[in-house]
Image 1 (cartoon, rainbow, N blue to C red):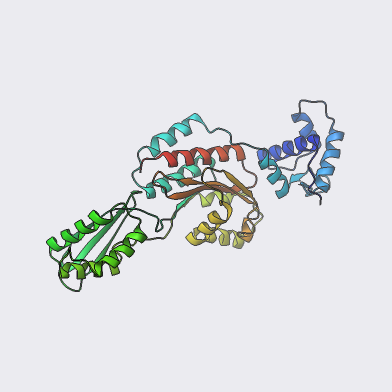
Image 2: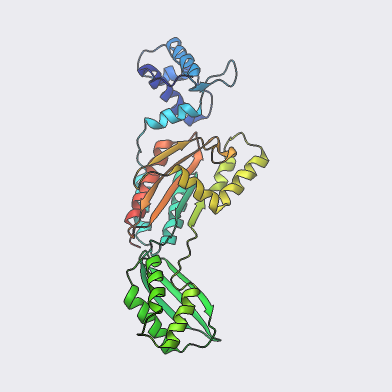
Length: 344
């Protein structure tokens, strides 16, 4: 099949067929396209164009007497001619309002996936992956009973992690305050990886802390004092929306697809693979069979966002190839903008 550029008439007919199929889900005939066009192009001329498009691999015909159905190639061509549309003013205001009340990255991811699901009626996905580029804000050490200490680590992007550790020997509240003050005074504003390496180096020659405090600090470091859980923060909502779609899947394959989407690692792989462009560039991928056999008739629309803290996040909508692309593209772009401007 040739990939030569389509003639103007063929482009117009193909886009009209895709739009009609998105609206109805039914094979599209020449008379349907003729009625939709404002010019005098006859059904016969449209049939000729459709025959050419079928030869080029843009259309398929499920039955001899039926109309034509756009192929994956047709949807890719159609998407390439689009720009993001607009979402309803009420949805825009809702995005602005709800994101203004957020106080953490986790809440931002959860809200993004939920709103994308509600606005598009597809699958909303949002993810952020903390890494060693995160910057230390401060630590807190809280003494507990039975030689236990609550370690709290806060980074500049407002992510907070805490864990309880059991010391080999008791630590007085004064010792913990001394350790906390030393770390915050010397390493607040440092990247976590660099702060951890430098702290371990200094402890070999540090004289500012008493030996007992140095020993306890070394133990806390081994227990992850400056370690941020690098597991991705992933939120997905609306997987059940796929159940009502005609994806030509057996019940077993549909279960396999839903199980795959529940795997955090699989979702991250899909986002990393298909949303590789720099922050701010909207991407549309039609046909995801390479990611999973049951995703052949699905499309992914998403983009990478740089949060105010500098942390990269990804937001996306997963849905059928037969989706309202302009509306979904607009929802992804508006949600990304709201997330990017959120004050957390």
